[in-house]
Length: 340
Image (cartoon, rainbow, N blue to C red; front, side, top):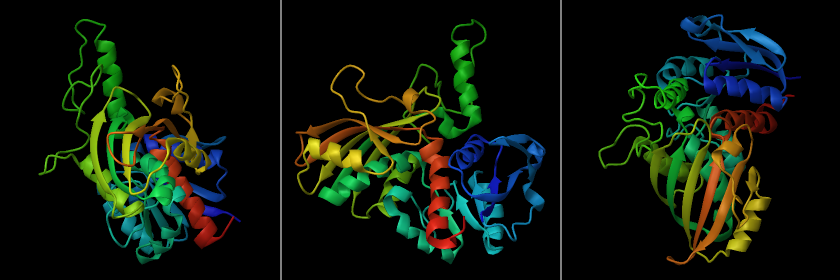
């Protein structure tokens, strides 16, 4: 016996990836509905070997459905998710709307799967920010061994994290660099992203951090441990898919780099590729389409007491969004709903 599943926003990058991953992982589905706004009504999307036409989100009745994956922005989620949840359908939300709500669990299954039992307060579970998700998968097993005091992270984030329009902007700007008269002015980002890096992800806050940087701080505390101090610099780079992070970690106890490497090799969701030779590490191009979070460049930091550095790469549309949401549904099925 399987589930009656709804994918809201099935025509977007993350929604389509959710459908792909649900099929790849053979999530037990008895019935599937794919919803979109009226402007995308009737658009065809693929689920395995089957093609579905999108239905109208505005008039859809969530009663009797088990799980709804929301892959739309915060405004649409705010409008439709509470009604879906009240109808008895468990909402797994990919937007930032509910991540900081104390009555909504924020889940990365490899890190805090048992927090899922808190879903019943609102019938909603939040999916974390893409840059946070991959980092905490690496932090948790190290934290369990040596207790993390402080994290300094610099991110190198792909344009797909901003959506399809940002992918188009990078592509068109890149082409325009080679064709005189076809240069493309920035519209999605404040500056040209092709052949450039932009030290701004999301909007600026009063203290000078960007909202993306604030998300990494707040979400790491909620998912892993509120005592961990985090400071982040988030940068948009001219990469289509795959977020990269340079992570500096300060521990309470000494942790040798070799032991850290072995801990990460044994941790769920992680693949360690760490050879001290040319190309002995993973780059974003190599992680696209993969389920894993890749860790490389593990080494001692001699400038602080009990410090380590590492390089962390993952497909932001997968572990950073769609895959993590499907993993949440798998945990929900195993621990709570118990079908399939």
